[in-house]
Length: 227
Image (cartoon, rainbow, N blue to C red; front, side, top):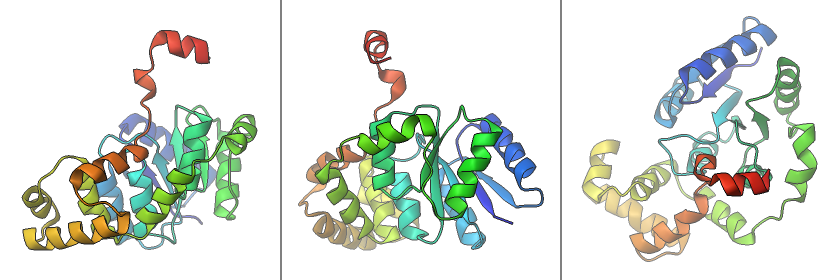
């Protein structure tokens, strides 16, 4: 029986997905987390989790850094992205950053079962109606290079980087992570070297590449033209 973890900031969606998963796999443990910090704690407590179903747009993380952080710290755990927004270019980026598949929130139980069977068997899953568009979406060499550099960071360095991305000062990061400010400075120096940047401003510019376009911010005229 697979052990599953749902990471989504909407309680009602988590509840509905949990019921669907338990219907497909009676007796399988299904855990829930409303943010990335809670997900990390659950993964540390339960080393038997096989698959994380991660919302593509989490409010407490900087774009794709949530996916990067989970893949970095828990490389043995597969992560499938879930979202109500299925932009092929964004899905392609998520795959480049280590996701094993994508499941739209509009999926029915049959598609959910098909997706789980695929990723639990170590196969990539994409919805049939999106597969061709995602696979033909042009990859960005700079994006792949950034993914490689982020993969070289330690889990703690990634947490420090998340703090920088959120505009935190070294002391604030130290307080949040329970470490000394001196240790934070050491992590900052190390991650700057790995990312090949010299200061926070350059790191911020680099991290713009991790941002995901918020579908809610698309003007109606643009949405109508793209639809």
